[in-house]
Length: 100
Image (cartoon, rainbow, N blue to C red; front, top):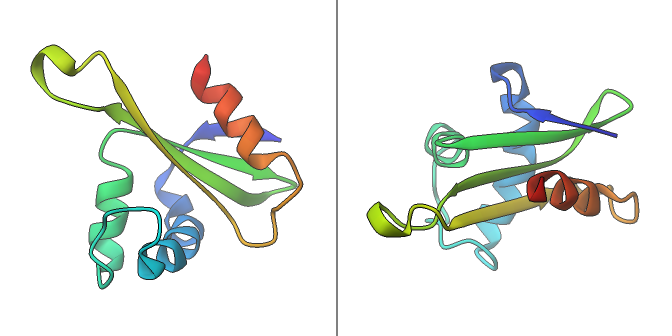
């Protein structure tokens, strides 16, 4: 599995992961009806990565400051895996990468 920086060509696959999670409203405080453009803009506003396995994107995550100013040294991360990627070590690989 390769974890790499998000590229514009990844947008469709990342949206396919974001949309059902954002629409469900169970884990992210995002407007349920957020547009694709706004969702991608939110997700990619800082440092964004994707996990790729056998030429398929199977996960994505971001790392960003949790606060501004004096709290900017504390990070916040968001992780989403693709449907069907369960049990393949995707979340573990993304977490390990983000800790480095």
